[in-house]
Length: 87
Image 1 (cartoon, rainbow, N blue to C red):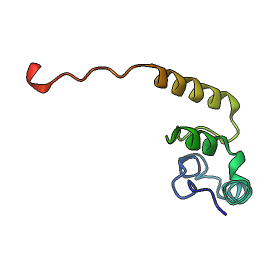
Image 2 (image 1 turned 45 degrees about the vertical axis):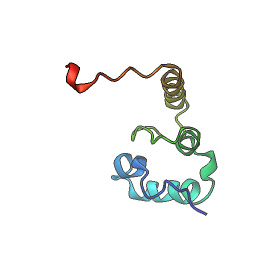
Image 3 (image 1 turned 120 degrees about the horizontal axis):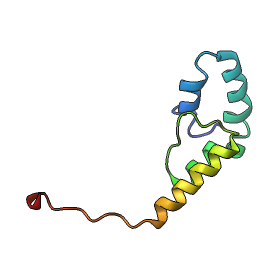
């Protein structure tokens, strides 16, 4: 079974476009194999949000920053909307 994000994962479209053999190898092992271990996939499943295109599947520091940002986002109340006629 393949990762549900394989068709739209920006990591391969943007970061690996000049390295097709490496991209193919990583996809065969990760996207079409053990995709549950991919950090990009895990965060997507937890949050429902797509990640920055340049975040590598194994980049622990970037994963930490994304999780911190998402945690802050969840804690912050949404700003009230200003009615258009009061502008």
